[in-house]
Image 1 (cartoon, rainbow, N blue to C red):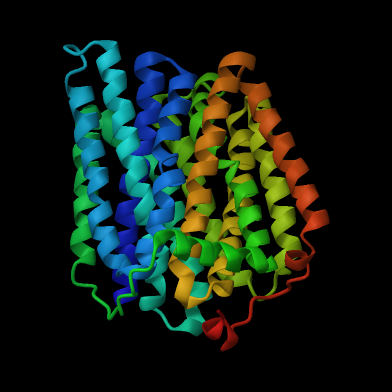
Image 2 (image 1 turned 120 degrees about the vertical axis):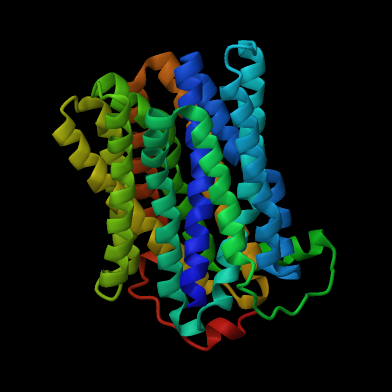
Length: 407
C-alpha cells in the first residue's frame, strides 16, 4: 500500500516537473519563435544538478530522502508562480522581462530536479523488500517516463481549453498534492554521521570507478539520455513544421511518447527474465537513436507516429534496464550518492543535448540536426558494444545477499 501511494506521489511530482520543462519550451517557441531560447530554457531546467546534484546524493545518505523530497519540491511551486506571472502579464511586460521570468522559472525547476529525482530513487528501498527492488525500480522508472510523456498532452489540453495561466495553477496543485500524499508515508531512517561532503563524494566515486558494472551502466545511461534533449526541444517543431498539426494534434503526437514509454516499461517487467540484459541494451539504444533521427524525414503522420512509438519503446526499455541494473549493483550505504550520479546524468545530458539541438536546428535546420544526433548515438552505441565487455556479458540480474553487504 505504501509503495503504491509513493508511486502516485511520484507521478504527480514528475508530471509537475515536466510541465515546467514543456511550458518553458512551448512558451519560447510560441512567444519568441526561438529554438535557441527553447534549448537554453530546457538546459536551465536540467543543468543545476551539475552543482546541486552532488549535494543531493550526500543529503539522501545523511538524512531521510523523504525529507529531502518534501523540501525540494517547493522549487516546482516557485517555477509555476514565475511562469504564471509571465503569461498573465504578457501584454504589460516587455519581451526581455518575460524571457527573464521564463529562464528563472527554468532554473528553479532545475534546482527541484537536482534533489527530487535522486531522493525518489533513494527512498524506494524503504518501501520494498531487497529481492523485489529490481521490479520496483523498473516500476518507478515507468512512472518517471509516464510523467515525461503525459505532461505535454495534459499541458496542451489545459492550454487550449483554459489558457496558459490555468496550466501554471494546475501544475502548482500537482506539486502540492504530491507532497501531501508523501507526508504520512514515513519510514525509519538512521541518520548518518555528518562526515565531510568531499570525503563522502570521494568514497562513492572510488566505489563506482572500481565497479565495472556501475561505471559502464552509468556511461550507457549518458548515451541513452542524449536522445532526450532533441526529443523535448525538437519534437514540438516536428509536430508543427513537418507534420503541420494543430495545437491539440501536437499534444497528441507528443503524448505518443508517454504511451510508448509505458509500453516499454511494462515490456521490461514482463520480458526481463527472457531478455539477454547486456546485448539487448546495446541494440535498443542504437535502434532508438536511428528512429528519433529519422523523424525529420517523415512528413506522413502515420509513419512518423509509428517510428516515434518504436524508438520511444526501445529507449524506455533501455532506461528501465539501466536504472534497474544500477539499483541492483548499488550498495545500501552509498545508494543515495550513486543514484544521484544517475539522476545528474539523466538531467545534465538531456540539458546539454537540448541546448545543442536547439542551436543546431537554428543553424542547419531541423532535419539535419535530428540526423546528426542519430548518427552520434549510433556511433557511441557501437563503441560501447565493443568496449563494455562486463555489461555485454550480463545475461540476467539476480538478487543475492552480497548486494546488501557490499562496501
